[in-house]
Image (cartoon, rainbow, N blue to C red; front, side):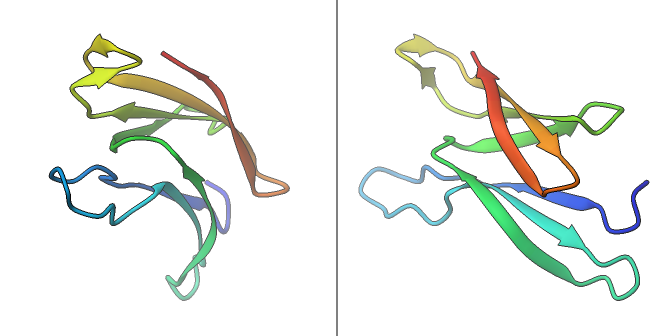
Length: 97
């Protein structure tokens, strides 16, 4: 495991109808392994209710499952994949379905 790994936090972005959104998607933090402090690195915005997150074993991809009733007009949720560059703290959406 890296000395100061990333920590990913998925949030519920859609609330009850008429209520404001309280979160924006998936947040990435850097964990200080000595102090336990978290520092915000960035966020992947525009992803609806990314309620479940998983990393591949090599920590190159982050997978997100959106807990929604419909996705792109079809019933059911959605899955998104993000590629992760640990050297630059960048991540980008690779695909979704």
